Length: 194
View: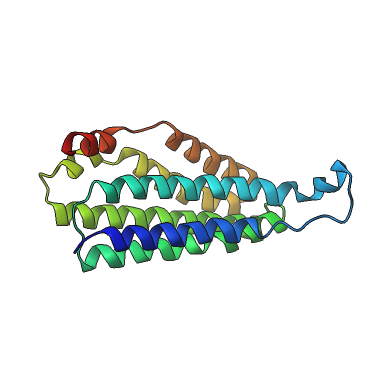
């Protein structure tokens, strides 16, 4: 099957996810800058989630762009990823509204863990479909950043449960910063195959 419908559907769902997250901002009653201060937890949770969703979108874009065709298994793996990403607005709003308290942070980290698992599964399905000797397989390699990310999200869950949700938030932020360091392997494959 051609991949263009998968790409279009995924881009649309991710755009809606980001839009829904920003709708959680309620305009304060006052007109002074100080009136924005109560929104800081919502703003911080939004920024954290926006960055994470943007990272998933970028990685998804490169992964699918380097793929020539898809099969039914890839479609379902992609839908699984989109499902967990679509829960991000809820987890984001709950965490922001409750000032990063324990259970909202736990739910947020569980959702990020499930997003990481789902992305890993999508990547696995694409590699299996493309073949073990394909360029995409070589580019993904051992997926060290993906494994570090998942392990970090999972570690953040008991850390929050032990009364340190702020440390869990820091871990999530550090994982996001890890992904700001570009990995050009898939881009090189795309460029070389053109």
